[in-house]
Length: 446
Ligand SMILES: Cc1cc2nc3c(=O)[nH]c(=O)nc-3n(C[C@H](O)[C@H](O)[C@H](O)COP(=O)(O)OP(=O)(O)OC[C@H]3O[C@@H](n4cnc5c(N)ncnc54)[C@H](O)[C@@H]3O)c2cc1C
Image 1 (cartoon, rainbow, N blue to C red):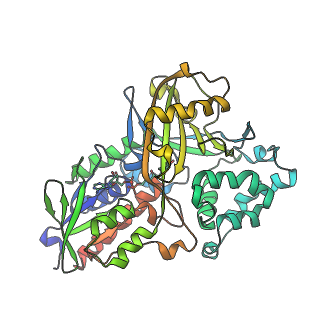
Image 2: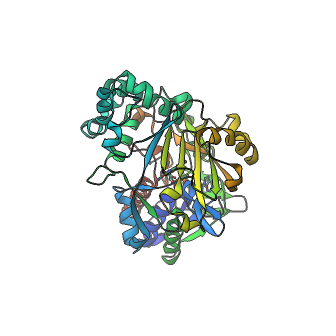
């Protein structure tokens, strides 16, 4: 089966998150017929929003770093630059029932749980990460090994170990140094000249940007079908011929799949060799649960609080309205409590009210002045495939964009490497996948 623009190719994109949207934007711009099939009722995927009293808020906290160039490029192309706001933010750490500000190098020097020499070692981790030239040398090293080597045992025990365990739970000792190195190097460079962290947000929320990209896709001739779950594919002679939904079979000349790898494995099983689906299932993920509180007042003056206390059940307390002001939410103060966990964890299967009841005593312990009467509403969001685990030698585990089916490409969060997932990289990878389709169509090799 040979395809060319003359045969009016039709690309189906599974998933209307930022990867799918960015790919659809470039494909429709190039005149290719595209249909986005999105299981959810709205666009944006993990960066999608929900309604808080008539305002849109991310289900899971989101910001950009000031150096997230691919988002900036996309926003610029859509003439939406004025929607992006850059602000300094306050970062802190909760350790032994105390709050420590950790927003700038001076704050690090004042971090009394560490000896002076170890504060300096902690402060040097960012320049040392940024000095890494050949990251492939870190592929065979765990984050634990690299951090102990870079900062010493005490810094690791007090600062990094609780955060690694809090974020990766049972996988804490498996996470590659590459993940940590890149995270630190990127976050460390999102700073003002005086060393303060600068983060970016989109007025109206990330969902508003997703909707604007979706709107542009439609204007360029693309079709977007919400509430449409892809349940399988049809294939012949090594090519996908159709994608199946609950109600129909849609003929395609190419497919871009953006859901998590195990979900793609379910879709292509029986159409690709078993070692391929095994490879897709080999990458491990953690789920995430976010308890979102709508409060009538602020909890603290910190935006991003890392929790280095194994007795506190969440790894981060993110007071979103210390970044985007409460006025954007009708005066509500918004706090996220975030935990990464295996989907089998008891907390993940609790009802929303059970999650709240479980969490309130811990919140009270951290913020003794907190009173339940401050709480106006609460929401709980869960994502089963929230964080792919970058183990050692991940470059060998990670599946390629191309698949055994010649006209099926996959571009997912788990293929963003050596950076960690993020909407900036979703846009980069979505656009790269679109470019590949366009090249293949032009050379009639699809
Ligand atoms: C807790 C948390 C915090 C985060 N914080 C940030 C942050 O601060 N900044 C940032 O930039 N990024 C952040 N991210 C990461 C960011 O959300 C993701 O990297 C990005 O949204 C991934 O986009 P995607 O399109 O690749 O995947 P997804 O957003 O997962 O999109 C995939 C889409 O496919 C759909 N789908 C799945 N199966 C099917 C099917 N069978 N048929 C049809 N549709 C299907 C899903 O509904 C989904 O909409 C965070 C993520 C989490 C979980």
